[in-house]
Picture (tube, rainbow, N blue to C red):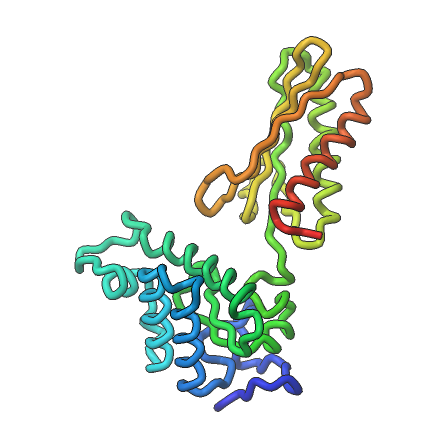
Length: 273
C-alpha cells in the first residue's frame, strides 16, 4: 500500500502509527525510491554534511537499507560493524560509538532542515533510540504536531528542575531555596518551547528529561550568591552556568528577579521567544 504525501491529505493512516502515537518505521511518506535518493544526495552534498563523512556514511547506510526493505535489521550492532568498521566482537553495551554518533546525526539533520533544507518537501529524521530513519513529508509531520516538519514535537525540549540547595549553615535560607525553585518552575512553564517535567517524591523513579536545571544558594555576610547550571542529560555535560550575587534585604524580590534572570538566559539558550 502506498500512502501519497500531499498537502491536501495529511491524515495519519492507522497502520503507520506506532502504539504511542508517534510515527514508526521507515518510508511511510509514500515517496518513490528515486525521490528519497535525491533527497539523500542533496543532504550529503550540503555544507552541513559535506565535511561530516562518518555521519554521511551513517545516514546513507540506514536510508539505503530502508530503500531495500531491510529496515528491520537496523540495529546498533549492524550499524557499528557496517558503518564504523567494528569487528565482529563489537559489543554495543561497552562501546557507545553508535549511540553517540546517532545523537550527532539527529542534531546535524535538525540543523540542515532549519537552514539549507528548510524548503525540502521530504524530511529524513531519526527517533531517539532508533536507527531506522523516518522519511516523511512536512505536511505529515505537521499533522502529528511537529513544528516546521522537524523532529521536535511542537519544537519542545523537556526540562526538570532540581531544588536549589542551601549551602549555608542557616536553615532559614532553605525557605528561600524552596521559593526560588518554585518561582523558576512557574516561569519555565510559560516558555512555549519547553516542557517542564515534574520531579518524583517518595523515592520513585525519576522521569526522563532532555535537560536538568540545578542550583545552589550560599549566604556570605549580607549577600546571597546564587548559582544555576543547565545539564544535557544525553551526555551529562554542563551547557550553561551562571552566578548571581544579591543583597538579602528583600528575599521575595530577589527570588523574583533571579528566577526571571535564569529563565531569560534559558530562553536565549533554547532560542525561545
